[in-house]
Image 1 (cartoon, one colour):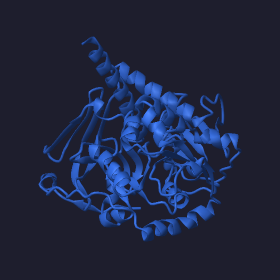
Image 2 (cartoon, rainbow, N blue to C red):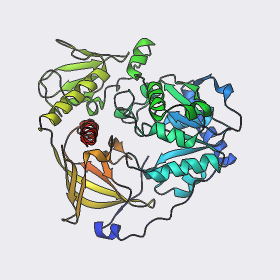
Image 3 (cartoon, rainbow, N blue to C red):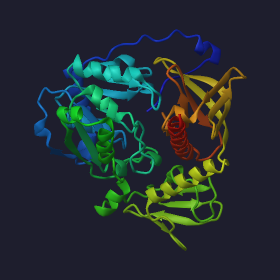
Image 4 (cartoon, one colour):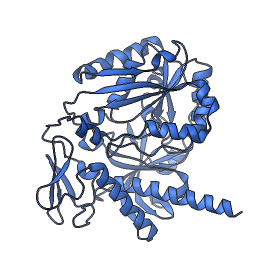
Length: 429
């Protein structure tokens, strides 16, 4: 899938008029049905089945908040099928509206900016539930999982549930990640996909529990490990390309400690620095072809990388300094390519400069609990996105290797440190 891109000078983009804000539309029955019909091909191919748990507690016309884990493009197809004929609005990243704003609105989509404070989103969700009498589908992880485990969730979920005041339903998929992991370049594997749709909280439960208690419940709902699921259920992924692109996730060699030297080819992950080779088995394990297998389980390898990044931050040695191509998003007409620049990331946060000195943007670590980062974003390239409510900067690193996953990890760890420091400072007052 591609996105409309237009070349324009940075100062001309800033001068564009602000886009009009619209309230969400109730999903029309025709579009609801269309989504379901278009989803049938992929779901038939994956022999999809759904297990409904406690769903008889939800009234036929009772609006609810549907939370769903985010694994691949098939997620919306699953939701559109198992929620049918219930009307629902879909919380969707704002770049998804580019070039197709009115279609997305007719489909019931509500735009939001990933990992940016967005008070309008909550208002739109309340409007959809209270005024449109529609349910709301939301992916609270906001981005696809890199390593097959849940990505960081915001602490604001509990407060959001309290404001909405409706029952909460959870959709958890099995096999969707194994079929189409983000790192593998959109190459589909032959894997059966299933889902559980569970009634998790009633409106009364939401009213009686504190935001902290609700956060804990939702965190438990998002406690999953797709590689462990594959191993425990003997799910075979035999495709000969299953490790291609895995270097985007496992970017650091645990044998020689080199970064950016890993190469995923076929079924193997190879360190170009020390020569050590690993194979991704058909059942989701990593096995060294010679010597010790430091991390047989991919999420353990990824977790180790997080600890390495955390230590770099604590030792004040962490640094990202890369040349980037820069695109910006200020409206839904297109993405504007505004030129080149340089992206820095240190313990002080992000600093982006470019466009012949016209662009100079800084973002503190406390600004966001995670990072909008992606692989081969809209077929343009690996991307790091920062920004605020007015403008988003999409930075495409040039000749920098596999830095996207590390930058996301660093952003999350810096936020934890900044949050702890702020809490400690407040406690001393």
